[in-house]
Amino acid sequence: MMLDGTTAEVANRSALRINPAKTCQPIGAMYASLGIQGCMPHSHGSQGCCAYHRSHLTRHFKEPVMATTSSFTEGASVFGGMANLNQALKNIFTIYNPDIVAVHTTCLSEVIGDDIPSIVAKARESGAVPEGKIVIHANTPSFVGSHVTGFANMVSAMVNYLSESTGETKNQINVLPGYVEPADMRELKRLAAAVGVDIVMFPDTSGVLDGPLTGEYELFPRGGATVEQIKSSGDNIATLGLGHFASHIAAATLESKCNVPAAFLELPIGVTATDRFVDALRSYADVEVPEAVENERGRLVDLMSDLHQYFHGKRVAVSGDPDHVIALTQLLLELEMKPVYAITGSTGNQFEKRMHELLDGPVPEAKIKQNADLFELHQWMKNEPVDLLITNTYGKHIARTEDVPFVRFGFPILDRAAHRYYPTLGYAGAINLINQILNVILDRKDRDCPEAWYELVQ
Image 1 (cartoon, rainbow, N blue to C red):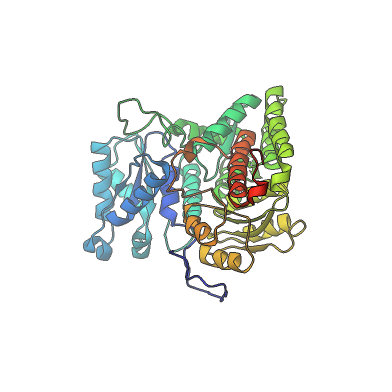
Image 2 (cartoon, rainbow, N blue to C red):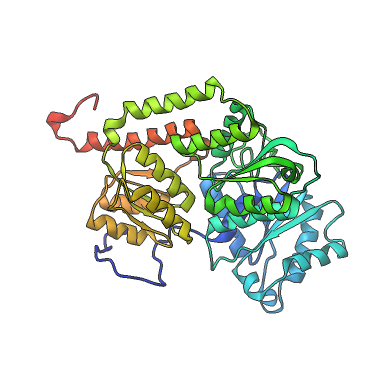
């Protein structure tokens, strides 16, 4: 077995990461770019970088991911990538004719020191960028940060380049959804509509990476936030930034640039966090929460009450994006489970600060760590086993080696297909997530219980 050689002895490591719990910035930037309608993501670096980022997203979403590259060679590596980007923009607008190109940098172009705004300005002067077309950019070097950082930087770029304030307030609320699935973005829009609130969501990958099969290939799917919608965000009454690491920078930038009040929320996973989201919508829009939404909440609470005996006291290890882990931990606590290990591969003191606020009381023995890797999490599990592991696909080897029930959650999920259709946000998303957790626990109970205790209904 692949990880049979992992030892229980934990040694302090300051530089080396084994089986990291993150991936690189450009992947997040590319994912965010796909949430703009008519947008071509562009990787300013080598072909290999772009191919890796596209394939990683394709394997997660099981959809073709369109992106272009500056195709760096040895010459660009020495003399800079200005000529490559200029030619790339000319080709992109001539061949594919997008409304907007979202450029993100890579390690190589960052080390060279390419000044993207200056290069784009010269490309526009030379006619490589046609009149009326838009180019935005984000700096996303892979040697710092994570895919969540890259996502946050590209969403901030959308605000910096596109958001405008005309002085006329629109009765809409901006929602920055965080690094979540297309189904989650669709669920947020459905929930807002159910409350009776008009929202502008960006980025929005619903309809882009979960689109229907119509028999006709569309280079630019009809989903996504339009440029006009993002421009209008500067006139809306408020912004809800979901997830500290993925959305708060953009929400704060929009507040500073266009004077749009920002509410900084965590991802609405579980009852309490979803209540905060719904209450923020209600409060800013000055509406009443309808009975249909209250009934949704009631069904979730009823389910949690009915199933309480299966979850109580179960020890859980959680790994993933910091926003995901923080929000998921709150749901686990609502189920009276014990998240004893919680790690993220991203950096940021907010993660450990918030996790200690959540766990120091109910689970004082919990181990919490940012900038961690799955290797160390595995070692913790060897020393004190858990009843359940929740993380992305890269946890499957640990789960198999330690014979632990496993729920796939977060990014990436490479070995399953339908996750992009099932939300985990909102009241309905929590029901989906609880269903997944319950099923693996009951399957294990059926497998392991003595013959005398094997029952049709556990």
